Image 1 (cartoon, rainbow, N blue to C red):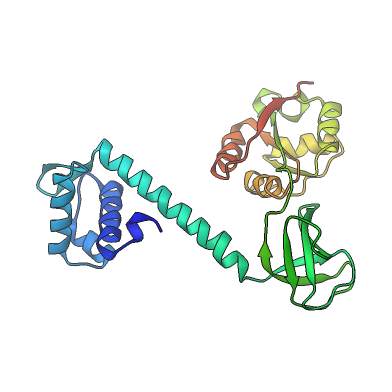
Image 2: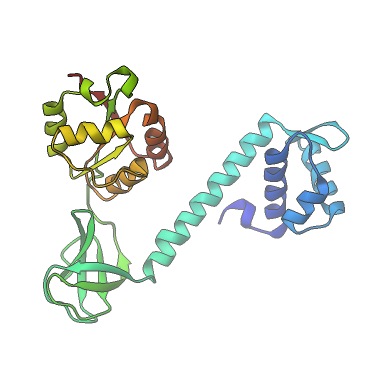
Length: 261
C-alpha cells in the first residue's frame, strides 16, 4: 500500500501539503481545515511539522510555499497513490467486475473463454487457449454480446499509432494548402480518422475521407490507440496543441506531419 495511505496522520499530512501547494502563498488554515476535515489547530500543527521537515517555507503570517523538497515528496507520494489505485482498479477489481465482449462462437454461461482485442472491441472465444482468459456469465450465440468475469492474464496486442496531420489556418491557405491525394492515402491506412477545426474537416472532404468525429479528436485517438487501432487526426494548426495535450495525458506516442499541396 502507498505510504500516505498507511495511517490517517500520513494521509492528512499529504492532503494538507497538497492544499498548501494549490493555494500558496496566501494560505487559509481555516479553509484547509474545512477541506481536509480536521480542526484549524490540527492544521497549524501539521504545517509547523512540515516547516520543520523542510517541506514548507514560512514567508510571513499565513504565507507559506512548498519547497523543492516538498514538491519532490508530494510528487512521489502522488505517484505511489496512483500506482496503488491502478493496482486496485486493474488487479483487484479486474478480477471481480463483469464486462461485455463479442462472442466469436456459441458460448454458454460458465464456459471458460479466451479474450482478445479485434477492431478495438473485446472478443471472447470459447476455451482457454490464449494468455488472457475469463468466464462467461451469460449464454450467447456467435456475434452476440456476452458477459465475462474472472479475468486473468494480459491481452496480447500492440498499441496503435497516432499520426497528426496539420492543416494551415484559412489565413495561410487552409485546406487548399494540403495535398488531397496524399491525405487520402494517409487516411486509407488508418483504422480511425478524426478531425478538429473547420479547415481540417474541409481538407478531409476534399480528400474523400469522412472523419469518425470532429469533437475531442485527441481523446478519441488516444482511446483508439489504447485499443490497438491506428488513428489519424487531421487538425487545423491552431488546434494541434489540444490534440497533443490529450495524447500526452494518455501517454500515447504520436507523430506530426504536414502534407503540402
